[in-house]
Image 1 (cartoon, rainbow, N blue to C red):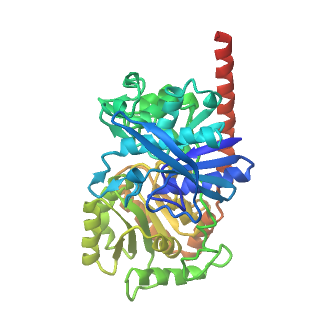
Image 2: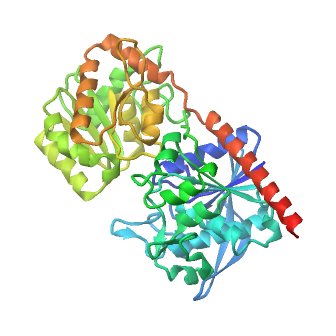
Image 3: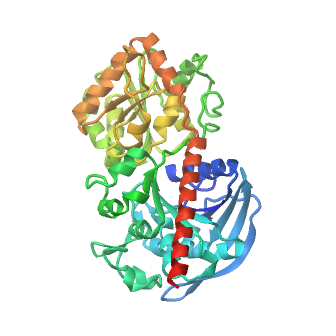
Amino acid sequence: MHIAFVASEAVPFSKTGGLADVVGALPRALAALGHQVSVYLPRYKQTKLSDPATVVRSITVPFDDRYRFSSVVSGGTQGGVRFYFVEYPEFFDRDALYGTPAGDYPDNAERFALFCRSVLEASKILGAPQIFHCHDWQSALVPVLLRTIYADDPAFRDVGTVFTIHNIGYQGLFPSDTLPLLMLPWDLFTMTKMEFFGQVNFLKGALTYSDFVTTVSKKYSQEIQTSEYGFGLEGVLRDRAATVTGILNGVDYDEWSPQTDKFTVAKYSIQDLSGKTKCKQDLLAAFGVKNADPKVPVIGIVSRFAAQKGFDLIAQIMDRLAREEMIVVALGAGDKSYEEMFVRLNKQFPNKIAVKIAYDNAIAHKIEAGADMFLMPSKYEPCGLNQIYSLKYGTVPIVRATGGLDDTIEPWDARSAKGTGFKFTEYTGEALLMTIKHALQAFRDQTSWQALMRNGMNKDFSWAASAREYGKVYDRVKQMRGTTHSAEKVLV
């Protein structure tokens, strides 16, 4: 089957978060199963292409003020996957993908509308797929356009759409006059289509018009159909619950494995854990923690600093946590208040709490390899990847039981020696502190702890199983589209 991915980022070309990891890895896993896979991305300033070739010279995209003309370049084939890039320097040749520290770019609606229209027009020349698989709000106009403006285009008559929500908290909300600006019909501005409390909601449009909706874990697919986690779209999702499912993200063990990690000072495996001690020493040195007792547990954090990630809970307990026998190393950036919190705590407890305010892939790998535990107390977490990386590195996760964190981590039971980590349910600082203390206590029995480490290292969350699940969804959508068209022929 020919599947075309449409997304705003993918490794190794562009990245701000886990979306890029998924779009970089899942197409390769699908190609390995025999599918023909193309990936469409914007060509950003940070996109490095070794030998780009223009494959579509000019695409006319109408806006209400003027026409704009984009082009498409080929990025070649990697892992059996063909990559295409929509080129329009005025929109995409910028320092960041979506905005500056001051906020989102004010023309994001225009930027990603041009991207979506360009993908559809280019695919008519390069080959229309059987399935467009779209990801997050930046690609949400593809299913909307297909079922409205392009509804009668013979090139797309049999094309189905799958839409994956990576984080429903980001929806693409814009003023109502965005619709005429993008030359979209006003009848989309209704409660059953794209209207959302007086604004245009791109994500809602995709949820309304896609053939099938997936998200990145089973638990999260259930959570987003509730008022607590649905961000106002829970009703839309409940209305079409029969075509909503959760498929857990996989991870790329070629990049994230203690046996092959190019960023770590030593390698280790489930058979020989000795290299982890060297990784721990190297990690502490990288964070400037001196004269640390190697027997003291290290808790790692790699995260965007935001309330969603549970940093409000961490703020509540850090002063008390610092009294425990442990060291926290944190890597991340985000909300200024949490960045300042970690800087303050580092000054207050210089040998207990260390921080680097940055996004640094090499340091992230060092934390996964060198820490004893990994902390993810998220308020909500669609899937999460770091807890899965941590399992492979024998770095025991401490998580809140939400979304993919709940799906991937099994609570440790020392009596039966079963489980892979520590979980808490109640979203409070006290519950978090109690769970960390439980983990610190368990760490004291190193024989039992190594059994816990190996339980996690034995887990396999590679992409192959997830790719097969997506294949089943594509088959179902293809069947749905065929049924729809048969009904249309009967009506004619």
